[in-house]
Image 1: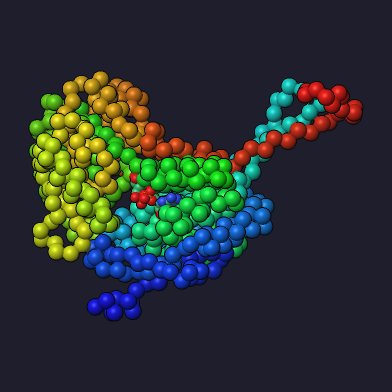
Image 2: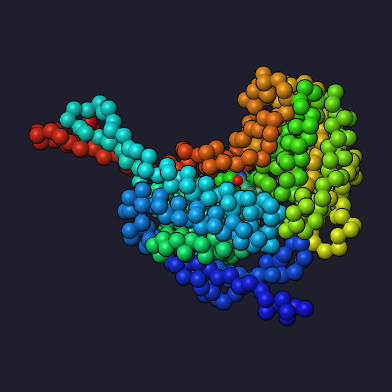
Length: 498
Ligand code: NAD
């Protein structure tokens, strides 16, 4: 059986300087289809030599023509990448589903929609202007221009790779930077399919390089590389601390998009059907494998029992199954490690007094794949293991609250601050809570939306910096200030600052 698999395995290579190549060590690693538990693809494993080659290639491309193109010309390349995504959404979706277990409905939709991020920055790039300064000195014409930073190292995890790559690539390229993207060692196939599409677009060689490998041998070398000037990282908090330390080596500007334990509050005056769908989307969408997953639910006293009954009967009806099938609503988890971690945390929570309302086990009817049932646990407080830790799975911890002030306190008693949700038909309540909660993204009477127009990012342990939206393009540039002396006179006393 292994032999048959080997012969039909996909083999992905590193994309460096416009060429697809093996790693210099010839080492490879495999990826496992989470719905079958079978290895299905192998990947070249980049080591320090490969990282150096990728960075050199990006550095040469940066010093070559790329940053000197007109912004409008770079925008045309971005549009061409967007077109490739749209034309190949079906293929990209299939590969991402195979590699990560995420539902095809969503991966195909995403590949198609993510084109809009490239179009957005393509349209924005030639609207970025400098300024002429109202300077407070005589005979001086002073103006600012925005310049690209240099080589960008983009590090991304395995979930939502098209999205997480686009929000880094599009603004970085638009401003004239070049990029080395390191795919996760888990499920990196979607990025290498993207590499094939990017190759078709015919960008100058080295503008985009895509590699995969492990944290120490690849990620660390990349993020501490002396020729890297900017790091855009998405991943876990623990890794983020390494990234910040690595960046001490090259003093790169860093942005960090990290995890979350996002709180959702449902008030007694909420539209209950809407809140039920919102909560379902927040924690069971993508099997809870989303950084903005609403994994802490606070219910107002008066509706607590009713809501628990309704959300648990909704959870029980969720169709778990193969992610390629249309009727499936929840596919498997991406890795066995997540599954066993979730099992352990659920067990501990129950031991410590949590009441398992539904789920809490693998579905018995499926004998293959890393599936886990939608799980709801009632908790007296949010310091129980499932309520405390980011699990990246379909596990909802539910707590009670009474009144606005209490829920604001509870929602802010959180080491993370990525997203939060509020369900209430009272606009005053919704706005006051939204304003008071320390999170980067607030959803009111809805959940789980992304757009190129809307900035995305967190507070506290969820990181810093933003992705998407207009301001972000400036984070991929630096201001240059130019002073021009228009006087006919010789400069005055050179020994004092003027
Ligand atoms: P992870 O932190 O383990 O890995 C992320 C990436 O960092 C991988 O490519 C990995 O190889 C690399 N890496 C590991 N060690 C490194 C090192 N020492 N130096 C440089 N790179 C290194 O994250 P994960 O578990 O794969 O992904 C899930 C995490 O990502 C969750 O916490 C999730 O919330 C977060 N996430 C955040 C967002 C967001 O936009 N805020 C989006 C998606 C996922």
